[in-house]
Length: 242
Image (cartoon, rainbow, N blue to C red; front, side, top):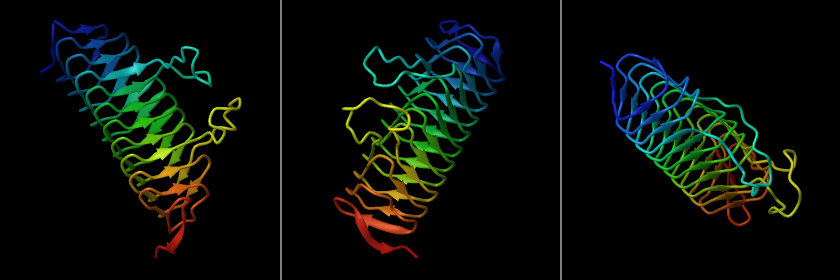
């Protein structure tokens, strides 16, 4: 049975079967809520957002935030006014999903996480608590990004990638001192099954190959070949992984 609280603001009529919307949620025009969606209190879902079947959105989450630079950002915000969350997802308390984002089915976005515009996240992924994902990032299926890590703009993560806690990725070798362009700002690329240990730092434009391992605390300044373990500051090859 569909239950829509009278104390919620609901401006759409595209509501599936057995949907629950709790008090004080705000749901904009042309939002699509699939069957058995649960929207908890104080959630904001902006105009045109599409939510797949069996997805649950926890208190305080904001889906469909418009990127606005306020004159402070180095690059203009470019986005399409759309956001799709797949079936059987979980969006944690106070998470923020910007417009022009796609979240695949069976993906968990943790408490306080932020996902910027032009990002595509695959199915069965984990974006854990307080993870930040910047603009124009591609993340493959079954990839896990653990608590407090930052994925920079223009990064690519393949399938089954594992990013441990407090990992930093960067995309600007000039540290903001030169005019930026999409050519100059290039995040790292991670091949399928690559894994990065806690507290590692991956510098701009670096490729971490398939099945490669980056040790905890490493600073990766150059490409890591496939099936290679690197460690240290700067990171150097330790051994080949069979």
